[in-house]
Length: 242
Image 1 (tube, rainbow, N blue to C red):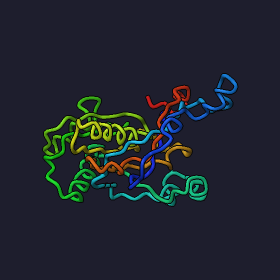
Image 2 (cartoon, one colour; image 1 turned 45 degrees about the vertical axis):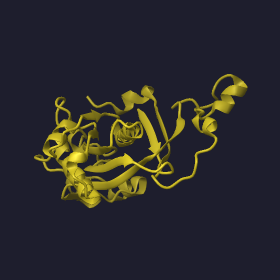
Image 3 (cartoon, one colour; image 1 turned 180 degrees about the vertical axis):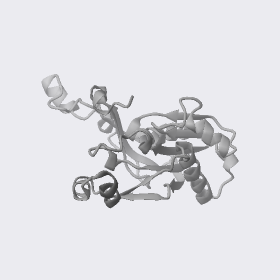
Image 4 (cartoon, rainbow, N blue to C red; image 1 turned 90 degrees about the vertical axis):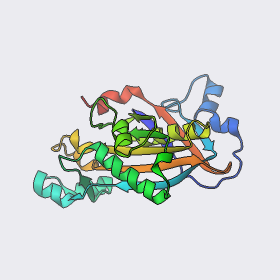
């Protein structure tokens, strides 16, 4: 299972104690005892920063169909109080059968482009984080690139629930290294296509939607303050999708 977390993009001063920030969590225990204590080495977590990149704009899209906890009670016999108490979720959006992941992604991208007030032809990279692609091939990113009329490389990134964070940091690396001037990064999924609607433990958690950001070079003090990435493949069988 993938693990990733990130903070907001904002103005920051110089990052200090780089060596300490780059050290794996639990390194001090490993130094003293010769091996990590408890779960300190589980994710091999490392904190990183990525500066000189800015989020130019954001866009989001969700389907029109709102499904409340009360709807799930009426249609599937779920307990609304149980859902709210354990998750805080009151409603989610479900895409109709004729709306695919690429449709959600395109709408989110268009909103980000409008918010940035830029010529979409300036976009030179498209990354889509998704684990519910329209097809195995072509990639959902290629479908988005075509529908937006872009001349840019495009690829999908599959990291399950962490997909957008992985896509975001990947796009930021392209921009920070000068290999992209304006990157479109999208997280999009039609989770209802793969979730068992009768599963009371899982079905209430997921809906369908997409979010998009445009990334470009920024000032040296702008960027991703810190992020952590890791994985624990041993938990794979617990979240297996055939």
